[in-house]
Image 1 (cartoon, rainbow, N blue to C red):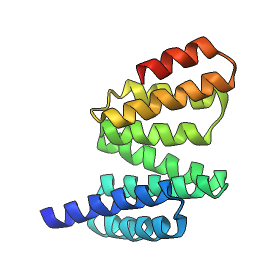
Image 2 (image 1 turned 135 degrees about the horizontal axis):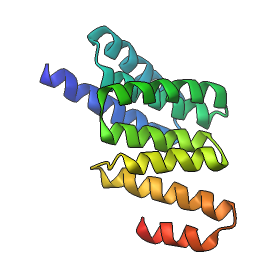
Image 3 (image 1 turned 90 degrees about the vertical axis):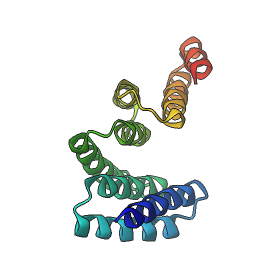
Image 4 (image 1 turned 45 degrees about the vertical axis):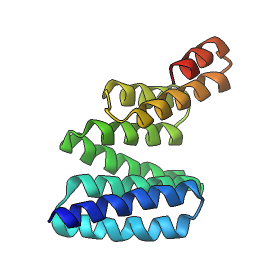
Length: 148
């Protein structure tokens, strides 16, 4: 059982890595496989992670409706599982789909989860800084970048 959980975690990590390399077809294939396995095993965390990756893939392809659907479902599962790091990461990915105040709210909700994974905290602060920069609040953007 531990080997299966470890393999699933490695698959999700690989899928995320592939999205960062813009190898979206490969990332989607791994995430789809992981989703099917998670459903079969009733693993809510892996299911949320796989859906989150599918949301990233959809957003990267410009399909914001599908990205929002996947990410919203991932968020609901992460909330049910009460996993702070997963919630924060999913809120970060939700913020990248949304705009303006809705994106800002998602990033702040992610930070409010108090994730243990510092990489997630840095990404949330950086994306919130990017939003402030894009909206011409340069002082706030710099403050957020410095915190990151």
